[in-house]
Image (cartoon, rainbow, N blue to C red; front, side, top):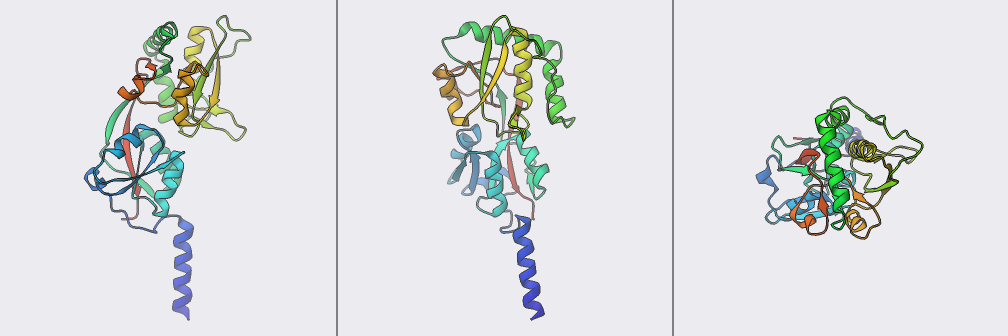
Length: 259
């Protein structure tokens, strides 16, 4: 009877831990062949994973949901951008990153193809912010210094000469964009766009939408820009223009840490 009771208790502990339902079988990028890979829908991780031989790609609306599925043993690995991946690894503690990155990426600001004037202004603003160190200060604060609310103090004027700039994003990608408990959207992309808007003398208005709706919102004129840690790709360039890159990132693999 004692052995039965002990076995039941161990089983309950495994369930409560959220991990341990399946051993990790992905130890290198080569091990991804034929595996179940979780991705966030319509991200570059989705594209890369779909090209892996015999991979079974499971798509989630949120990167966090993919990591939860990994912990439960529902997928073998998750492909995600490095910054949010590091957030989830630190948060959960029972997942880890492979040492080798899958791919290098560059993020850009999506702008409607018919709005060349706005694109040029944004590029000029990004150049200024790069040269004066603002972009580096913002990214370092969030990625290295543990910033949790804001790394930029601008956007404090009562009136802006050039009106409002509407930014479409998906607030499910910390530390680039996420929501506070009171619903405010914060993150690296928000701080960078605040700085860009100060350069343009415009008021930033941030709107949350599904990731796979961002480019459509820009195409249809529902938003002026799309900013969501969005990698510049040839496919996306068929629909929108992109600013010069403002962040370099990596596509990484998250696996269970139960070897």
